[in-house]
Amino acid sequence: MPNFVPSPRPLHATLRQGLSGSQGRFLLDVDLRIAPGEFVVLTGPSGAGKTTLMRLIAGLMRPESGHVTMGGETWCDTKAGVMRPVRDRSLGFVFQDYALFPNMSAARQIAYALPGMARAERAERVDEMLALAGLLGLAKARPAQLSGGQKQRLALVRALARRPKLLLLDEPLSALDPETRARLQDDLRTLHAHFGATTLMTSHDPAEAARLADRVLRLEAGRLVPLRPPKLAIFPRPKQTEDIGSHKAACIGV
Ligand SMILES: Nc1ncnc2c1ncn2[C@@H]1O[C@H](COP(=O)(O)OP(=O)(O)OP(=O)(O)O)[C@@H](O)[C@H]1O
Image (cartoon, rainbow, N blue to C red; front, side, top):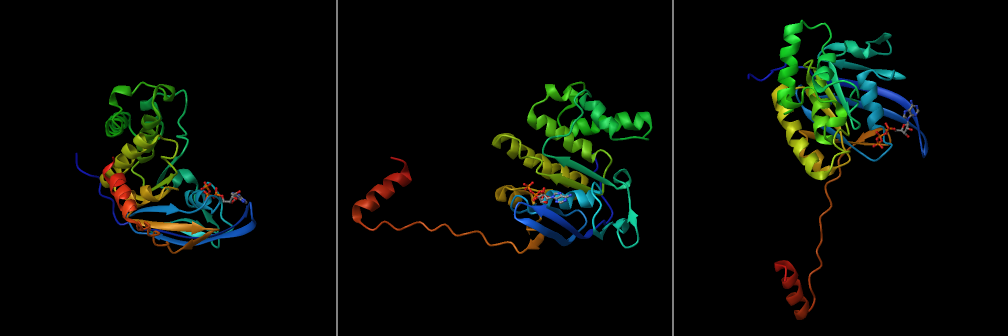
């Protein structure tokens, strides 16, 4: 199957939004540029404004001021009074809690994301996406019949079904157990290599960020800040001879 190769589609968002956090009011104030096809992971403490930034880019929230352009298309420009509806933005998003429709089969969830597509083409696309998610045998299954990993794979391919220019992933793997999470990280990389969508993902897990991202950004109290280098682990050196013996023993597991 040939890979889907997107044309160059950078994201540029300059956004300002007043927020009220646990420490009082603060300003989300960012100038974010993501190169075409780049996979960027956004980290930062709870309450820094990561989800809000995603919602502003998606158009789920109207910013107080700023603009969002994607591949030369203006999605939002508060000065010019432009606010393109979410459905008219070429984007897919996935959140931590899957957001699947409880009464729809896996196949129907994907078909629902493809309005206006001719029947035969849609059926083909649904099968293609189910196959990518490893869910062809579960086309008729409802979310309650799927595991956490299967549900999130379904949410991911549903978000990608329309071949969006931009993929927004808000803590998509944080509800999964560590083993499933590691498998889904591999799936995410594979899907990203296949579709090449410009991707912005939030994560609290530095190892996950390092594993997935072309570039890691950090948001603190509404501002993008430079990443701190990782702290060096300092192991105290054993002082006495008997300590060396026990240290060695610990190292070889006796
Ligand atoms: N529309 C709004 N108006 C004012 N404040 C808001 C609005 N939406 C969110 N906030 C506040 O902004 C802060 C940032 O929330 P946000 O969910 O964006 O943080 P986050 O970095 O995604 O946190 P977490 O990592 O815990 O998900 C929170 O204190 C929240 O209460």
